Picture 1 (cartoon, rainbow, N blue to C red):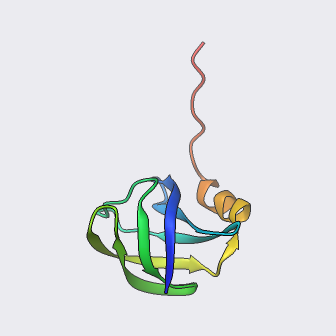
Picture 2: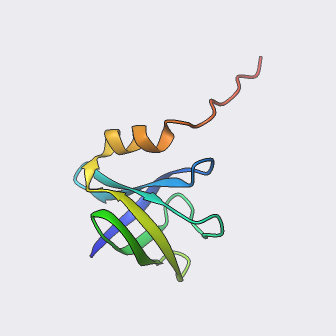
Picture 3: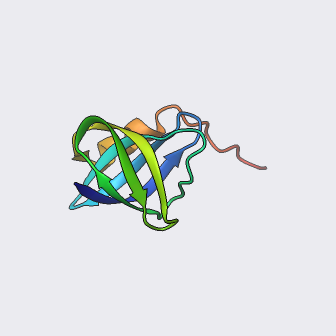
Length: 92
């Protein structure tokens, strides 16, 4: 099992980047009712395409997520997670 820290969340697509260290990350899909925030420590993830029950250690909350990737370079995982995010509007 893999432990990771959530470093980016796309609430539009419900994708998150789970940083596993050493420049590697997993892309996970979480349910709409999941209690997940940037910085949360997640345990019991798997690498590959799996539905897993994992533990959000930061919130003491068990949740089901779908892991959508093998471990990827973090910059590639970030590109996947942020691909459809709305750009932040610039205020004049």
